[in-house]
Every structure is written in structure tokens, then in C-alpha cells.
Image (cartoon, rainbow, N blue to C red):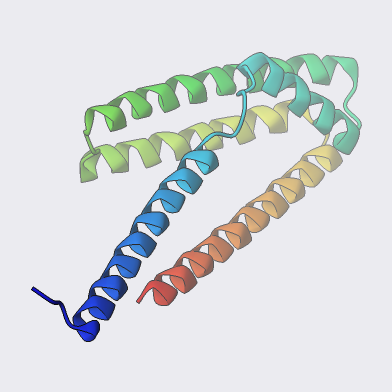
Length: 162
């Protein structure tokens, strides 16, 4: 049984497409795994230490302020890590939060932010507090910009795939 030249070419083209698709899938999975690993995570104590030093440089904190701020930041870091571990465990089980749970989490997060702001206002001098709030706003703006860039990149890559 002799296969025509054109049929052979068609089979070769199909095989090329399959190989290309397989290579794309493997490279995408590899890239996704590499992106997920960001190295060793800092402990809450290490995060707090770095944050206090950065705030000392930015706001010129005295020793008493450093001690008080460190206590607050350490408590917040531990709470945040515990909450993240809880959410990760739920995510790994395949559980997704309901609308009521999402509302409760966002409400709790906002309550924590209000409490943190009030604590910082007690510790910092008025000019330090004002500068701290400005720094906080600048960080939020940068995060928002990065989030927008990420959305644009995802949108562009989705359009390329189509």
C-alpha cells in the first residue's frame, strides 16, 4: 500500500503541530512552577525587624518608639501569617470562601487597619504620623500600578493565544 506524497506531508504537519503543542505545554508548566518559588520566606520576627529599621530611617524613630512599633508590627505579622496559613490549607483542600466569608475577611482586615492606624497615631509624633500615612499611600499606589500592569500583561498574552 503506497501512501501518496500529499498524505505524508499532511501527517508530518500534524505531527509538527502536536510536538509544538506539547513543547508549549511543558514550557508553560515549567515557567509556572519556577514563578511560584520565591525563595525562603522570612519569619515574622525578621519581617518586623526589617520593617522597624526602614521606618526608623524614614521617620527618625527614637528607641522608645522603635520598641512600641516593633511590638505592634510583630503582633500583626504573626496574625497575618496565621491567617495566610489557614487560607492556604483551605485552598489546598479545594475549599473556596463563600460570599459571607469573603465579606467577613475583608471586614476583619479593615478593622485591623483601623486599629493599626490608631495605634501608630498614639506612638508617632504628628509630623511622623503624617509622613507615615504619606508613605503608606505611596506604597498603595505602587501596588495598584503593579496590579494594573499585571492585568495588562495577562490580557495581552491571552489575546496572543487567541
